[in-house]
Length: 254
Length: 254
Image 1 (cartoon, one colour):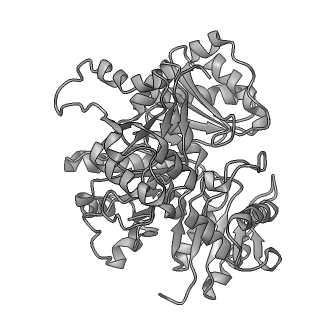
Image 2: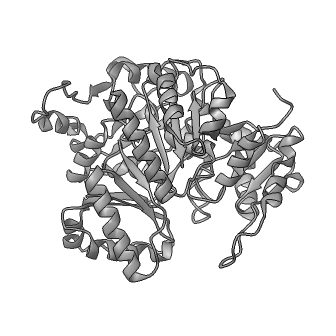
Image 3: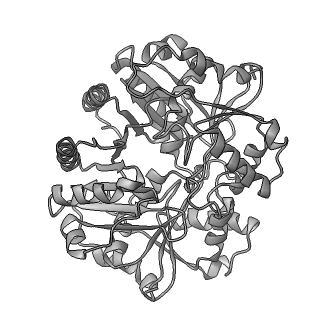
């Protein structure tokens, strides 16, 4: 159209390398696999996991170019505890191939890029540069967890991670529960897997007995499951600890 | 496991019958198509559109049974303007095949079931009845629009439809803009297609000039697009009216 390439939002699987025996065709449409196989330029949250995904793609659909020939650039990382410097130039550089007419794939560690990851900044820059943005259909653990929860799917919010500090975490859980009660809005949150069980305990000791809590573990993976019950029922259930290496999504509705 | 069937959450395409020339393999994984072809029992928002989807599935993957032999039950509808009667029995009846050992597919008019549609109630009943709930990967216009917007994907909310009454609608837009500014939370909303342009006008006349507005139209469909700009830039841009028969998703970040 305008001589520019497009920014293609490429979904990833939800296995985070935990279980790469999964058939990609279980979670990704054929067209998405074909598109991934065709792209020569990538902007990736992690180049290594992108290569490993593309290797799996190549087992289903031949890549247009050998893996070694692909240009996979990583999103700039912000050093922890340091104020954001002016790294716009590094971000803009990722779009240079698109300005030169090549489609660029944006891919994150899992699920849809630019959702619950740093990629949105690249998408915003693409809009500013007049580069067309094309999102491709794929799994989102947040939306699959919401659908499987049976909680309100007509009003919901994703709020990311809770504070690590115990008092701040409890205050935040109470705040989310009040918000949920006020607007009947399902609140979705995530945690790094090794803290899954600790988050569950915080939720169960803090939430009112009647508040419904849904936990989804390992969605789309073998053995994945979703359970929804009131906080009171979760406590009575004496359920085993959550796995510490499998991603989970938590949803609550007060 | 327990002799019961499962409730399978079956994603639909996003074409709403607007464009059924789309290849299903563009948006649905092969496994989802195979699963759809295997199920003999369905709970559907709309039996007619479910049949038409399954007909399209049959062109890609043979159905295990002829279309005519499938049991497709519709979700009970609440009569408008009438208080909800006790229709639990009608809802529970939809799960009878699962209690008898058959997998039941839950499917909505578009995208993931139980998200922005009435299906969540059936999912909640499945949890209560100890029926396993299995969400399958598919397109969600809300999450694709969020990803393509470049707005904050680390905190976002879907708030459904706005009030139809003009004054109430303006008040609600101001409320959502304030909420977004306070918590840097992207607010996602939808409208029935024939009111797309009216909603855009309300947003442009109500939002602050610096608030970013993203509009996605016809995602995953040929000619679909996403544009993100400040309210001021949208107004300057003199953009043509939004189509009145294609679904759109609106996202704002103040």
